[in-house]
Each structure stands twice: as C-alpha cells, then as structure tokens.
Amino acid sequence: MTAGLEYFYQHNLWANLKLLDACAGLTDEQLAATASGTYGSIIRTLTHLCGAEERYLSRITGQPPEDEIRQGEVRDIAALREHARRSGEGLIAVATSTDPALILRGTFHGEPYALPVSVVLTQAINHATDHRCHIATILTQLGIQPPELDVWAHDEATRVR
Image (cartoon, rainbow, N blue to C red):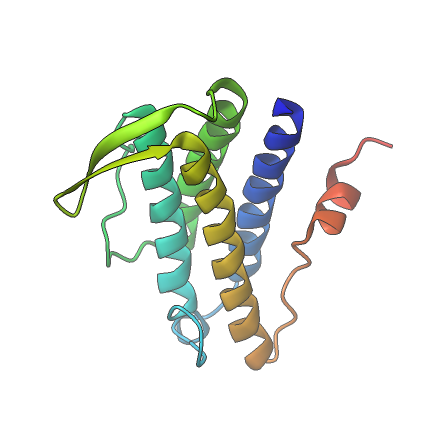
C-alpha cells in the first residue's frame, strides 16, 4: 500500500513542478490574472498552494517549514519551485513512513484538533489538485494551453521504458 501512496505524492510533486515551470515564462500581468470561480490570481494561487503544502507537512512532522510562506504572502516562481520541491519530497517521505492511523493533535486558529494523519495526507492531494485546476482555468481563459498534469501524463513522462 505504501508504494501506492508514494506514487500519489510523486505525481503531486511532478504536477506542481510542471505547472510552476509552465508559469515561469508568464508576464507579471498574466501572473496577476484570475477568473471567476477560482481561488485568486495565478501567482497568489501558486503561493497559497505551496504554503499550504508546507503547513500540511509541518503538521505531520511537527517541524516548522524552512523559510515559511505566510498566509497572504506572494513569492516568485523560482522561490515557489524550491518550496514545492522541498515539501513535495517531504510528503513522499512521510506518506511511506508514517502510520496513516496516527492521530495528530494540536491547535488550529486557537482551537484544539485531533485527526488521523491520513486526513492531512488526503487533504494535501485534494487541495493541490483543486488549485492546479484553478490555474489551468485561468491559463485557458488567457488563451494559453495549460500543461497536461493528469496521472496519464505523469506516467508517460516518468515511466522507464
């Protein structure tokens, strides 16, 4: 089962990096674009996605993120790529080494919580997929073909033949 979990997070890291690479050549105006029904601008959504992924990993490991992305902060694509790589590799590691039934305890917005690590691991995948789709929608509305980020494309790009 851990091999399957590892693959989910390998795909997640690959898709995040591929999307960041696709956005690296956008103008500031394009990075500021948004569309109805999405989280926000491309750059704010990318920053939010990377920051949230770091916080999910931190919640699981108990270790604060290196150079933490704060809520509402905006980072450039190069910095986000490094954040995505670090947190993506970290999620791969914890997904394969942490008991999914482990109960995480802490406080969030001043309220105590207790939840299985599997909830945080699942949320990380769901959250990233959702926001990558938001960015693909904005790119499409700008007339830019978004990269193929699905599992089929990941398999095609990474499978040893």
